[in-house]
Amino acid sequence: MDTTEGNQDRWVVHGERTLYDNPWVRLGKAEVTTPSGTRFEHHTVTLPAAAMIAILDEAREQVLMSFRHRFVPDVWGWELPGGLVDPDEDPGQTVIREALEETGHQVTSVEHVATFEPMIGMVRSPHHVFVSRSISSTTDPTELDEGIYVWVPLAKVRSLISEGQIQSSGTLIALLHLLSF
Image (cartoon, rainbow, N blue to C red; front, side, top):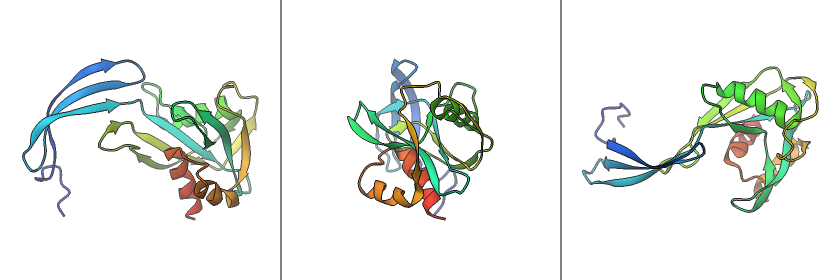
């Protein structure tokens, strides 16, 4: 399989125009040609980049998570700390900032695990996943609408996933990464 950029299986974008734009979402329409030669307009949705972090305790047996409600899908679930990457901010800095704001924990080092697109083909929104195994200090969180963070045993994570209690794609990727070792 040829994976070079110039291969014949590439979709060609002839142009894109914005239909709606604000700091949270941009809706566009792109004129594209598929590899088979079909040309048409395709909607695009662009969301800000996001970053999340799995913070492990010193023994590496527990992960810091919050059980919270998400009003858009109207679900409750366990999530890792994280948030939107500010303009001109490195995603590693985002997770350090978000960990402190949401949990009160100052992480001292972060390891990049993966960058993925949660709805590839439909939405542009890179998600950056990190892990931290070191905390230098703890204070009170400043972001109070993100839930209460508690240490969850890694041994319990598989059952939380299979019971549908973890639905956030970034949280799933980070936790599955931790469980794979």
